[in-house]
Image 1 (cartoon, rainbow, N blue to C red):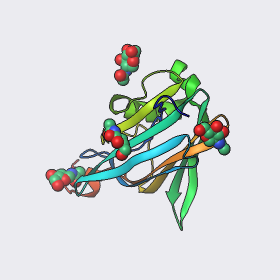
Image 2: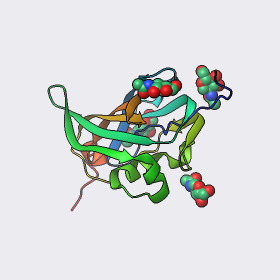
Image 3: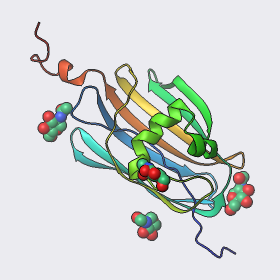
Length: 185
Ligand SMILES: *[C@@H]1O[C@H](CO)[C@@H](O)[C@H](O)[C@H]1NC(C)=O
Ligand SMILES: *[C@@H]1O[C@H](CO)[C@@H](O)[C@H](O)[C@H]1NC(C)=O
Ligand SMILES: *[C@@H]1O[C@H](CO)[C@@H](O)[C@H](O)[C@H]1NC(C)=O
Ligand SMILES: *[C@@H]1O[C@H](CO)[C@@H](O)[C@H](O)[C@H]1NC(C)=O
């Protein structure tokens, strides 16, 4: 029987949204799923629409036991006749990452969510973990315009426990593609 509400960490997930700057990023859907409800309860995983071009993401996950060994499978998909794997497909040791910040793709995600999540500490993760009103997205790498899906699978003790998946639209050079005033030589 659980004596504590030990929730554990989600780490959250992630994703993107951005606004007003070129390039343009907007999250369009979020889907979270627990594969093991005795360990991970997903209470909330939803986008909030603020305007036509701005959404924010909230995720609230509870871990009923501490997680000491956490890997994250990070996979990016791009839509082209269905979603196909695109460039990013890594397993990251999340506990090591939190000690050393040593993985570049994880670091991009970390930089996006560190100020709006409960994950700023090392393993183990316990208790309620949240991503709150995440909306400020800057993607520091060039991507072609398109529809994307960022899949994060959270692996505790070598077994997948839950997923946090976020769909987003990315438009390269948004301002110039929507305005004739952008470029004058
Ligand atoms: C986003 O929407 C707001 C209001 O709906 C608008 O003022 C702004 O120009 C839009 N930004 C872009 C990049 O379209
Ligand atoms: C599911 O979670 C329980 C802890 O609540 C854990 O003991 C068990 O190993 C997990 N099952 C799998 C398949 O990971
Ligand atoms: C997280 O979700 C649970 C279940 O819906 C809710 O009881 C709890 O208040 C939420 N926590 C926060 C901080 O939103
Ligand atoms: C994370 O925690 C460390 C140590 O408490 C602190 O120095 C750092 O500013 C925190 N970073 C964020 C983004 O909150």
